[in-house]
Structures are given as C-alpha cells and as structure tokens.
Amino acid sequence: MKLSRRDALAALAAAGTGSLAGCAALDSDTDSPDGTEAIGGDELETVIAVATAVYPSAVDGVDEFVERYVDGRTRSDPDHASAVTEAVETLDGYTETFHDDRYANLSAETRREVLDYMSVDTVDPVPDGTDAERVRRYLVNEVLYALYASPTGASLAGLENPPGHPGGIESYREGPEREQ
Image (cartoon, rainbow, N blue to C red; front, top):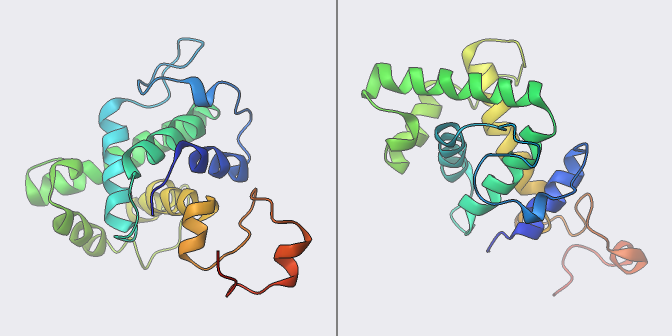
C-alpha cells in the first residue's frame, strides 16, 4: 500500500495540529514559511528510519509520508519539535555506544534490534520519563499514530473509517468485510 501526501495531511488533521495551511505546498527542506526550522535533516532522517523499522513491510512511500507528517507536526508545536530532537539524540547516542554509528545509518534488521534491546516495545510512552519511554513516545508512537490515523494505514489494520476520513451512513451499516 502506498502512502501519499494526502495520507500525511489526514494524519495531521487527526493529530489536531494548529494549522495545516501551507503544509501541502512546503518543499522537502525543514524551513517553515516564517523562516524557523522545525527539526533538522539528521533528526528527520532518524525519524524516517524508525518508521521503516516499525511499519509493516506492505507500506510504500514511507519517506515522503513521514517527512510531511513530522514537518507539519513539529512546525506547529516548537515544544514537540524540541522533544523529538532530544529523543533522536537519545536514540543516536544509544546506537553510537553499541554500534559506533547513528541509528539512521544502521541496517533495517539492526534498527529493529536496537529498539528491542532498548525495550521500547515494553515501556509506557512517558514524555518526561526514561530514555526508552521518551523514544517510545516521541518517535515510535508518533510514527505509528501517523500511519494508523491515515486512511491508507488504517485500512491495513481493518479500520474502515479512521479519524478524519469520511464514510457516511453507508460505512456504519456495512461491516469491515465490505469489498472495495
């Protein structure tokens, strides 16, 4: 399944970002229309690497989707952008200790192993918690939320009518086994 820019915008709307104005027209760089930076290129690369590690293999178009979502999400909330940057620094520091390289430079299999060793899958997502809890909250949960809040990603989980995706009365009368 291919994720699109429209999926990223739907996920941003579901996340309740302040404004989506101009999101579709932004270039892939990190400069916002007012000249401020959301997050840096290295940080964005790491968030995309996390997404490729945790997304199902059936998903295509991850890079552009995550880039659009993270850009819109961090641009509308500077505190969130700082928290994402700190979580990336924590994850990169962890991988440099054990693998002598940044998280984004590791192989896909090693990326998944790093998240497992860090116990990111078993901790609660706590904004001001331990390193693993913050990585879970600001990196793993954020990209998973974006995926499953989008119409394409939600269909992977069998959700016919995800938040922000219109379906009308017809969708409530028919079960999820409806063929499309």
